[in-house]
Amino acid sequence: NAYVSLRGSADQTLSGSGKIHRFDFAKPGGNALFSTASVKTFSGAATVTAGNWDLLGNTFTSSTGGFTASGAGTLTGAGTLTGNVTCASGGGIAPGSPVGCMTITGDLVFQAGSKYTVNINGATTACTNFDRVTVSGNTTYAGTLQANFGYTPAAGATYKIANVSGSKNLNFTTLTVLPNNIACSFAPATGILTVTSVSAQGPAETRAGAET
Image (cartoon, rainbow, N blue to C red; front, top):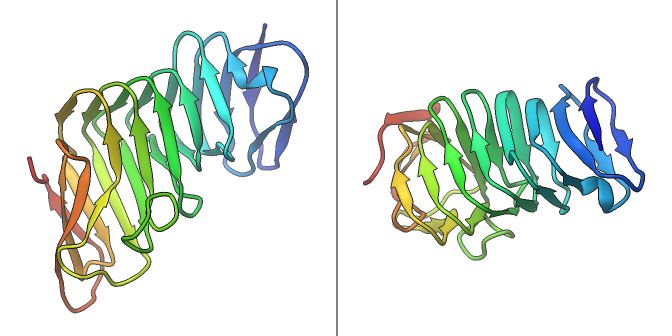
């Protein structure tokens, strides 16, 4: 079992037949490309501390330790993470690349200072028109929910951006919407983001708290 730490700004490819014990992604640019199935299973923890680790539709498994995004690191793109996921201060998840769905087989915890970023280009279909994270376990909310709209919705439009099978705890501290002519609320119990009003366009809107 190997410890792999990726740095630099170019794409890097991992291949081979053995398992990775610990995986650390700290790349300000570029991505990690996994060419064989075995290296997508980590016997220990996987961390992203800088840059965007795009899952590229793959399934990654952490047998122990789970996945952690912190510092300036983001777990992004469609794909599946098997193991608990923690978004610590400065870190976050962003399923869309630009729009997509991320599946977590385990628990998801947003800590203070973390961020969940969703891209919304329509209200019809998750994964195609708007981002969603699906969680088989429990989810604890904190930090910031960032909603980026690529179209002008109607007031009352809803988007199930979090599909959580287990318990839903607390809420995001801050909800930020771009552009700011769109106001929204988020309900942790249902995972639904709702457009509450649409007005003349201006800079980003930042609000403390969200629907409980």
